Length: 224
Ligand SMILES: *Cc1c(COP(=O)(O)O)cnc(C)c1O
Image (cartoon, rainbow, N blue to C red; front, side):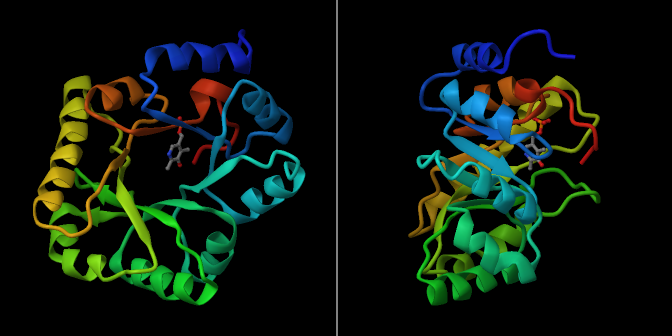
């Protein structure tokens, strides 16, 4: 149970962050009433991992015109059009085929979504994402995706790491970004990394966007 309000929690988190770190509130399974509380406390970036849930919330929150929506879940091709039409950010582009599909569709729909490429910085059979080697090997193809505004890398760490292993993995993600930027027309700026359990380490390691759900809104009922 949470004993302090959403607004107080957000204020506490903000005090831990420099102003250049973008706080994305992850609102899967969170009610629109709670989202309004977060909005009132200054949150403008909201992230969802299911498109149906996101669209329904967008309807209910239509009056809040300056919300910026972030898609953070595994994206199936048949949902790509809905996502492009409603979500300006997609953090979870996890392979080249999906990226190229989004590029083609974005061109047709006259959209230019902001994209993060999801990398598995450590091997993890339970997660989607590029391995570092696959990402580097695909880079020339990534660069040709002219209808996408590719902003950076996103990562989710495997469970069960020590704090120093988590920190090292976040630092490594930054190094992959730097390595890509050495030889690329496209310059990556963002590192979307850090969730409720590890965001302070992520920020210390250079995260520019953190994605927080439970620490703002309390535990979710269904785990995912
Ligand atoms: C659920 C989720 C988060 C937020 O996780 P918390 O542990 O609730 O902070 C962040 N990123 C992704 C991709 C998620 O699915």
